[in-house]
Length: 448
Image (cartoon, rainbow, N blue to C red):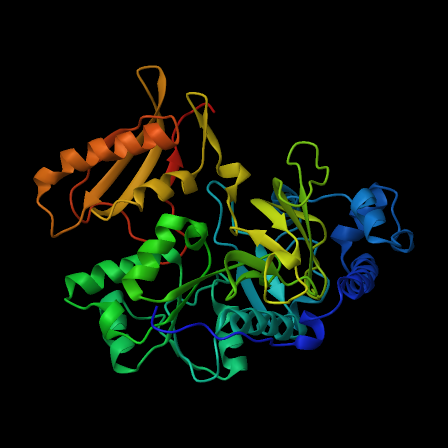
C-alpha cells in the first residue's frame, strides 16, 4: 500500500464511552424516538395501537425488543401505495423537508420515497464524517466522488461528510470513466468514492487507456458502498492491488438516511456500527428471536435520531454476523459487523439443493484475473435448475483461452460450492457495466 492509514477519533466523547453509558444513551434516544413517532407519525401510532402498545410502556431495551413489532419493506410499500405519494410514516409537513431521496429499487418493486429534514441531514453528514475519519480520511485529502447524484441517496451523505472533515471534494456526476481517470492524475486525487463494481470498471478502462493507477495515481484510500463487494475477499484483492490502496466498506440505507456502519482502519473486514445513532439487532429470519455474537442472522435497525421519517425495528433482510466491540483494537465502544453485509435473505436461491447467493458467485469469478465482466442467471433447462454464467475475457487475451478458463471456473464452483454451472464466453462489451448497485445475478425461473 502507498501509505499506512492514520488512526483517530472524530468524536472521542461518544466513541470512547463505557459500554454501559452507551446503552443508557441508546435507551434515552429510543424512548424519545418512540414518543415522537407516536405523536407525529400516523404509521407508527396506528402500528402501536394495533399491538396494544403505548410509548410509556417501553422502559428498557429488552422490553422494546420483546414488545415492539418488526416492520418490513412490504409494510412501507403498502403504506405508500395506500396513502400516495409519501405514505403515513412522514412525521413533518412535506414542505418542511430539506431533501427527497428514493431507494435504488428492488426488482419488481417501486422505490421507497424518503424525506430528510435539515436536522436529519446534519446528523447524516456527521455520521459519514465520523466513519470516514475512523477509516483514515483527513482534511488534506483530495476526494473524487464517482457517482451520478440522482435521487438515489448513494454518496450524497458522503459528499457532506468529506466536506465536514475539510477535504477538497470533486463531484464528477456528469463525467464518464475516460474523463475521470485523467482528472485523478491531474488533480492528485487521494481518495476515491464509488461502488466496488465501478472501482473495477475504472481499473479496466484505465488499462485500456494505458494508465497504471497503482503506479501513476496518488489514490491511497477507496471508500465504497452500495453493494457487498468490498467485503468479498477476491473483489477486495482486485481493487486494492489495482490501485495499491486501502479499500473501506461503508453501509447505510435510504430508509435510515445515514451511515450505519463502516470499516475501521485497525480491523479490515470489520464494520463498526454507529451505535449512538442506530440501535441494531441480529435475529433469526424465521423465528425473529435474537441470535448471539458470532451467529449469522438478519439485521433489524432502529434510527435513534431520525426526524422526518422515523424508522423503528425495520428488518433490512441483510445477512450479518455481530461481533463485540473489543474484537477491534481501535478502542471504539461500538460493536461490529464481521465481514460487512454478507448478502441478503431475499437474494438467496436454492439450485439443486445448494443455497446460493450473488456474493458466492462473485467471490469465485473475481478470483480469475482473466475475467473482465460476468453475469449469472438461474434458469430451468430440460426440467432441471441450472446456474448459467456468462463472462467476457480481458481484451488483451486471445479468444482461444476462453475454453480453458471456462473449465477452471467450473472446477472452482464444483469444489467450493458443490454446484457445476454452465459456462458461456460472451462477446466483448456485450455484458452490462455498473456505476451504482450492480445486478449481476438473476433468478429467471417461474417457480422457486
